Length: 373
Image (tube, rainbow, N blue to C red; front, side, top):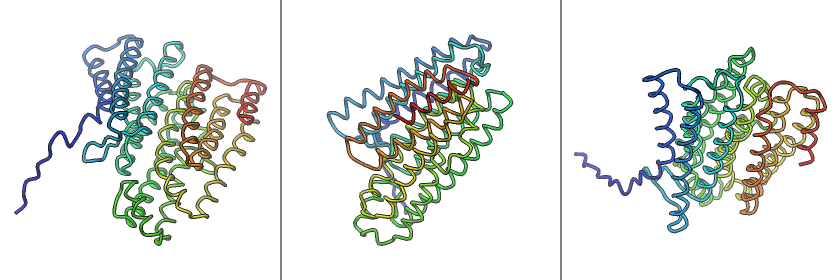
């Protein structure tokens, strides 16, 4: 006879879910308010969104204080993991999200800002990103990835311009491929280690001396393809410029920053133990991808005449720079990565306030600066 399992609330540590639950509660509240009283001005929903993001940031800052005293916190059957990396990543995610949502108050050109659902999807998307960075469990990473991606597909389509639906379908296709490759990669690592938690996978592979090189090769190839699509790295970037072109200028700037942060944090956790494994061919493949991404994207950006396509290639190039820091795998490199991306978010916020096509000079100058940077 099966015995009852007693799980104490203290061991669950549900407080680790607080930041994500705040965003989800904010999204649900926006939908309920619109159901009760529609046709409210968009400024009300913008202020409400910023308010919940501030509460979200406050919850994360509370974790920072607890982390300084007690170290890494685990919760929800040890699936949630609040460490320094998760705290810093969430602060940048929320800060950049507040920076970009305010842009919707400065423009009346984009009708999607008049829909309350847009702001609800925005908060659901942020909750998905937070789940991605606050765990090393491959299943929860996948859940966060799909939650954020589905919301982002819909937000792109809500722009309702001639190229918006095409952009949404292309981004959906890229996301579906990334999800499929991620699932197969996770399956390969589970087969070789018996776990879906990255720290356990790393311990098992190290103890085994990386003897199951066939499974490791399959897992790495699938994971590289998944991150290649999500981070728009060459040669998986093909439709990324079309997606940016079909989105609103503010959302294009947002896509070049916040989703990439979540992807980079997951990549940092994933490739950290693989890079230090001593498998030479893996390091060579990753460095080749980084160099090609940094170089080719800037060359393609030089010939663009649309500012959003230029922004797409700039984002692809910067993804190469950041992946280079991840491959170094030191504390100094990780610190530089976050500083680099914070500064990049401010520059792209300025780009996000610009819409339409610019002349060749206006497009090519930022590309040159991107190349020099």
